Length: 316
Ligand SMILES: CC(C)NC(=O)[C@H](Cc1c[nH]c2ccccc12)NC(=O)[C@H](CCCC/N=C(/NCCC(=O)O)S[C@H]1O[C@H](COP(=O)(O)OP(=O)(O)OC[C@H]2O[C@@H](n3cnc4c(N)ncnc43)[C@H](O)[C@@H]2O)[C@@H](O)[C@H]1O)NC(=O)OCc1ccccc1
Ligand SMILES: [Zn+2]
Image 1 (cartoon, rainbow, N blue to C red):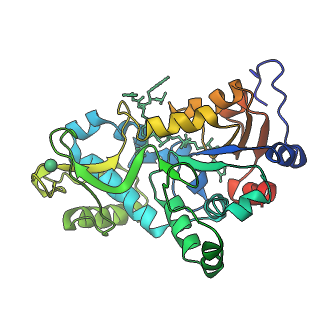
Image 2 (cartoon, rainbow, N blue to C red):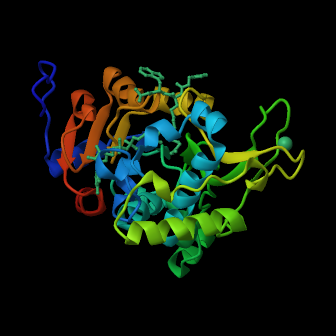
């Protein structure tokens, strides 16, 4: 573990001991981050992945950046929409989805009552993994046997997208002023963004990652609210903005006795505080990460390596 390990926080990587802890688990939560989608080709925020057109992703995901340059921020999110549409869920997404099947989860956590995924990712890959699970033949049989949860069915089996959804488009006015929002999977989202994206790609393939590739799209050509005609924005939660579903999440965090921390650097709050809260109450925390992260400080177990192989190895 990292040098500033608090005294007494013995970190184990024993699959056996972790599986033992699951035998008495009742309320299981998973807190996931960009590392969950890394194997699907979605860049993470840290390292090279976090740089778009030589701009830091974290600086673009703010209300200020959008107010100052909506053209730039829309091209950033359009790029991520294209990436996320081209991507497919990986083994880690599928494993976490499969655990929503009671008979599957019971085989490793016989006493479980609730299981919920709290994701910081906006790429919709966990939902797609769930949708393909629900449409798979074996599930149809299981469905008839006992009630399979639908996505976000409150209580258990839910996928909670606390930082919003990349494919949601909403009015840029405040909720109170205009509550228009719709999920729009069209690619491109609009012609101008499509053209800008394609031109940028030619830049990129010419090896220059420069901000020159960013077009200056007039605001009136950017996506519009279909209710009041105002400028629209991506339906994600930007820094300084209140995350979604906080009440439901806080209830789940307060009752959880097992928390899996998957592919997150545990640096963005309040998401980074959940494992700590479970650990402080004597719950079991297991971190799945390629490498050491701040999450190790409040964990009992750590499984270093790609989560797309470690999750199936430890929980499959
Ligand atoms: C930078 C940080 C210090 N700042 C914050 O936390 C801020 C401010 C703050 C609030 N409270 C605090 C307390 C202390 C300090 C600061 C704060 N928080 C906020 O602003 C939040 C909102 C934060 C949400 C911002 N939106 C995102 N995303 C959506 C948009 C978009 O995506 O564009 S955050 C975004 O960045 C974060 C990136 O972190 P990760 O997902 O973990 O990704 P990262 O690249 O960092 O790490 C990847 C990890 O995976 C590992 N990995 C890689 N590959 C693999 C692999 N294959 N397998 C396993 N692991 C792997 C790597 O090793 C690495 O560890 C995610 O949360 C992601 O969603 N809002 C808020 O607090 O509002 C107030 C409020 C509260 C209540 C009521 C009213 C108002
Ligand atoms: Zn509107």
